[in-house]
Image (cartoon, rainbow, N blue to C red; front, side, top):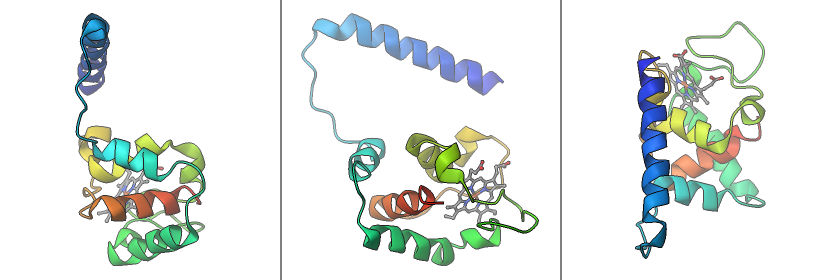
Length: 127
Ligand code: HEC
């Protein structure tokens, strides 16, 4: 709850700052992972990228806590339908900053690079 308030305050502050800075020239900013991810996932994504994400489910040990479908959930929820339930930004949030999504979660932060993160999210979106 406190986090929600903090986040919404931060968000409002950003809006205010954005509004005040409207006349300032906008300096090109270094792309954040978010920009990289959303740009990479625009339009049709190569099947090879999605397959790489499916492989990462095994190599990054997601299966230790998540089933994909069917069966009694393990430590985390089954991932079936997650691509319909969640936006790309939410999936990225869960992977990169799980404790920001839920402070006491057992979910560890994803330890891969941006290209692996993109593949992982591309695959999650197909579930
Ligand atoms: C140590 C256990 C653990 C591991 C390993 C883990 N997760 Fe999680 N994950 C969780 C838990 C627990 C949650 C649910 C949040 C909560 O209630 O704490 C979660 C939530 C999620 C969510 C949000 C799902 C929803 O329906 O709310 C996604 C997506 C996700 N994990 C993907 C992954 C992926 C992909 C990997 C591998 C890179 C992974 N997780 C590895 C424990 C884990």
